[in-house]
Amino acid sequence: MRRVSLLMRFAAVSITLMALVGVLLAHVLSGMIQRRALESATDAAVLATVVGIQPLISDAELRSQIPTATTERLDKAVRSSSGAKQIARIKIWNRSSRVLYTLDPHTDAVPQSSTPSPELAEALEGKVEAEVISSSAESANAGLVKQYGTLLEVYVPIRHAGDAEPSGVFEIYLPYAPTAASIRADTLKAYGVLGLGLLVLWLGLFRTVATASRQLRRQSAHNAYQALHDALTGLPNRLLLHDRITQALRASDRDLRPMALLLMDLDRFKEVNDTLGHRHGDTLILQVGERLRATARAADTVARLGGDEFAVLLPDVDGEAGAMIAAERMLEALRAPFDVAGLQLGVEASFGVALYPSAAADADVLLQHADIAMYVAKRSHAGIALYDRADDHHSTERLQ
Image 1 (cartoon, helix red, strand yellow):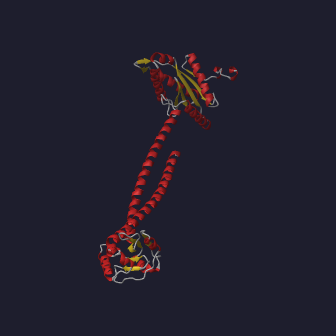
Image 2 (cartoon, rainbow, N blue to C red):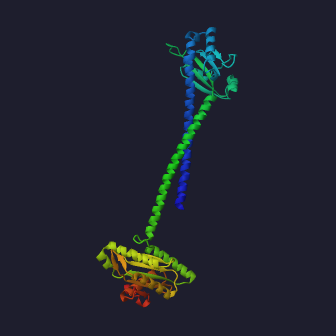
Image 3 (spheres, rainbow, N blue to C red):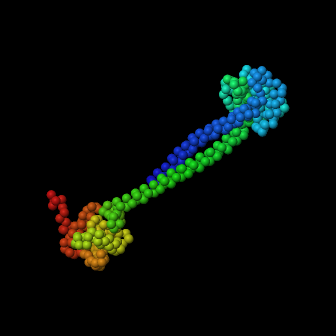
């Protein structure tokens, strides 16, 4: 569960970070799209000035007064242009910041009053300036804003060949709605592509992490299994057997039912290894483990402690008689010949039997007593021996 929660935590943290990155990128993209749209509209105004307006008016006329003939040509050029519907108003300023010409192509009324803006001074210096006018615009443009909504106001310097500085400024008002719509469409498209890209990236990362997590879980489960099981037979090892014994001791105390532990090893197994080799010795060990497991009950635990030594935990037996019957049944199962490398091998085994609570107080002592009984069975060639305190010479005093 802990690893699953870590994966879910990664999913939550990563998707949050992706969302933050997406918001940041969306903000940057939105700004870039807006700037590009404004630049495009401004470039269109510059092109209209250079191609459509500037050739119709001379430098001398800009410095003095635009005559009626020129005014009529300008009116006709503006009203008949393909982009007339996209123009809200135009103005032409001279260097004295005076309006020489103004026209609203959508009405015959020609507005005459104009208030110079700060951008005009920049345009007179030769710079193209643009400003977005909203509903909070100055009163001079309030009526125009009311009619068209938000406007894009562009100031384009008028410079004739040979002039060191602009001789006038062409001011054009364009409805901002088409530009805003283009910005919204491009922004939504960019958001969609960005969102899809981030989603694909997140799914790829999540899949990679999930795959790695599954591999780690499998490896962890494999390592845990290897730590508790014998590599050759797959049976529980000494560590897992000790844990099972501890659990069986608690159950025995709770239910007041005896339990038993059988320890077994093969007689003269070294001769098999030396004669046939360790590979065939392993084959014999595998077959012994399979027979013990087939003979044991479902509740019993068959473990390999190492080499040719096995243990069988009987968590619930009918006293000494029940433990001895179980040991005899397993000894009988091992008497049938084993097929190893085409040879029929007869195997002899020795079983040591220790009971709880009569013969031991804990798992370690129970293992020790079963081991003592097993060696008694091996020395006496009896096949099976029940632990007897009189046979136990493994005391602390004897060690000292």
